Image (cartoon, helix red, strand yellow):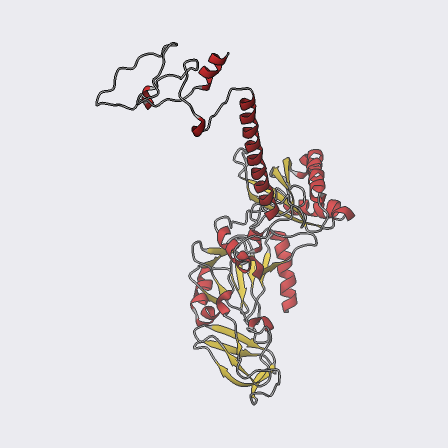
Length: 461
């Protein structure tokens, strides 16, 4: 049986057992421009340099004329048929600088936990949340058959476990065989890091689907995914953005959560979504992810639920919400036949345009908040000033300048003695007497007092 026949047979078995294939994308090929620091393969007469302290297996598929080559301490160059190297004088290519050798990028930069580095077969209109882009415990993993790859197995916080691993023409389904391969020189050239990899999980036999099992590893997955962005998610283009279970960043759209019975069939429901809804013109711009995930609400009896993520990828908004409501209505009408017990939906808010000041974290929102605070302070000051002027005009608030103050006359009440402000003329102050309406104070006495506007008003009245 040829290679194509084995692949077709594997895909048929995958459909029967509901296993999924995950394919490793990057390679360590000599003829891959992305593997070089200048994003191009070495020019004619150029110098080639590999990292001295890195182990790497490099596949060479074409012929190259170079001036010199610095090899790593441990590694291998695998030459395909017709490939090879020849010597050329430096400067043979005018576009090639002899002082700038072509540097092979660090082969250890590729991590198993990076969702960008895996590919799976998805039907048109469907995608996987970030946690499920990395091989799950029920998946079959396939590496490039030419052997030009190197994979970091992660920090080792949690062992990586999959159903099978296909590499270098071998398929490993038993831990003993895989462990022996990883310990060999060939295994150390292609796999590195403190993480552990094991195989032997059964394919998912539950027709309602199986949980991927990456909940604990999600922080590492998201860190690897967002590393090119500085570890931060891009701002979602809508208010009240949603973050589905297993997704690293927020998105715009809607999420439908289904509780189900044992009669629910995940593949049949995906087919129903594709044929009855996504085939309609108004929904063709949507991207849909359907999988079984741990339940979000602890109030429900089931431990898992079916998550339907409707992501809006175009400029038109609200389409995901309309499809979500259609799916909830469909579950209410055909729930018994589909094995759906209940359906709930969550929807993101209105879009945030580039010139809008209504974004969740846009600078305009902070400017609006600061302007509101300043306006409130100004209004408070104006209200206080108006109150003072009103009290002044009604005579309830009076003040006199110190240079205009005169000794209290007999007809003007002089206030009353306040024991707190009494200035003692001896060690023991005299006893405090209650104020009398006929009390007159000597202006030469050593007392401190103040005019009370309330008493002054009564006297004037």
